Image (cartoon, rainbow, N blue to C red; front, side, top):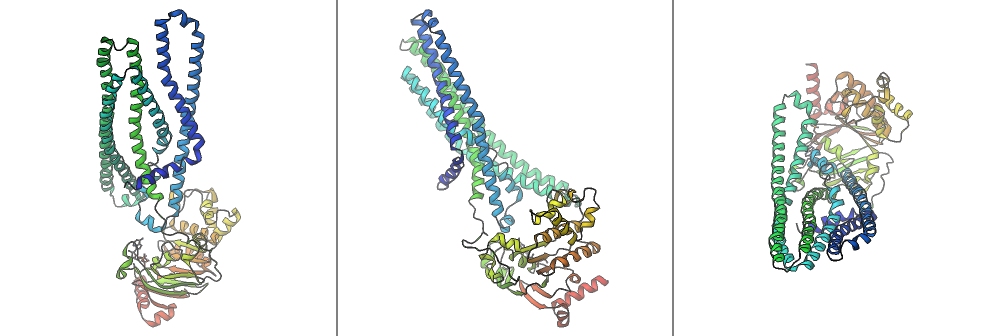
Length: 589
Ligand SMILES: Nc1ncnc2c1ncn2[C@@H]1O[C@H](COP(=O)(O)OP(=O)(O)OP(=O)(O)O)[C@@H](O)[C@H]1O
């Protein structure tokens, strides 16, 4: 824990680097401001002393100078105040924005397995609410520490010079309460971290309940969701209450400090004046300095809360940033060069999660397959047999545990990920459309495509006529996740996207499974056109859709069980033949 702290602090400091001019400008202005605050009671004291010793004439003759001095001091203070509150805040906001950008960049670097392990709500929480307090802390903390320290030390020195006995008594009380504050502060650190985790749970729960609203409604499970949300909301409330209890003790201690210091001034100071070891003017000046002493002290105490909140958020931010992406370009990775589109799985072993050592639990157990260029290979077999996993290893969404996957002789782990992803096109059962228009969604396949190219891709995907029939045509909004469109329409937009991307290798993972017969026919036609001339891997449960594939591969228990054409496999009378007969009879029945 303690070894982590300097790293956390150093990585926080790194964000000041691009703003050093603003940082020092802000700090300098804050120091000047503090200096003018400190000088004010001294000026008043000088005036009062002058008034009592030299009489009002001396004051009147210097009034212009006094007035000019005060105006100058206030003008400087105004300028500094403006700089601190405007540019200081802007610097904080820029740092927060840079952190948010870095976090998002890091999310984009992570592989599928990271997202398998982390909840979207938690990731969003780190991106949005965790960084919320950072901007304020980044701007105010250094300034507060420098200025308040100057003010507290400065005020104490002046008080010490006026009367050292009184100053010493105050120092003892401050030290005792300061120690107590430090102890509460340690408790606050834990409470604020806990608070961040609870709000993240609320976000995760919200993401689940709202994202799955259709499922919730269809199962009439609103009460269940309410109860689940209620639990995380109550836990959050509990952590907030604990936070306010700690903050309450903290604030009360600060108020107690101020009260204790004033009591000392009145009682002990009154005694010293009565005893003749202090003048009334000194006591009055002293009283002014006490507020100069306690106000920054109170500010430092308030900022400790702010620091702990920001620290809790930054710690969670830093946790993500220091996580190494498990799938990244190898140091000397070269761009993938697809010459023919020859794909080869050689003795591939693969497990999700931490089961790598346990080969019996492996999802793929020595999967071996040679996929000839330009041909269509269909993977069939029992559910959970490892078909989708096989396909996910090709674009390196996960890395194999043993063996290799190669494209034209190049191991997918040795090539640049960007080039690999450009070469492999994917159409899945769950189509994800982004908020925006149909044109936006198609051109997602190649953002620099012209409108004519988008239309051409839509034509090939059998969706152009449908789009033209819409009042806004290609400018029609698809709604959240394509909610305004049918399953078949969404699927054809996804296919148009891949047409535009024009990859040499294609993976169709149950692309038509969720469609009715009529939509399936239209989608099937466009898929067949898409597959022309490309090496294609198809997964389909309805065997009628793949019986014309060049090669059919039966996958069972993470291994290749049979390989052949539809007729060959039927004639062999094995797993495929049994499957086919079952479906054929099921369809007739
Ligand atoms: N992201 C994941 N994390 C952990 N385990 C997974 C993950 N995805 C799949 N699995 C497991 O891996 C095994 C193979 O799953 P896979 O989806 O590859 O099979 P499949 O043959 O495509 O099945 P289906 O035909 O039902 O889609 C299953 O036991 C499944 O539970």
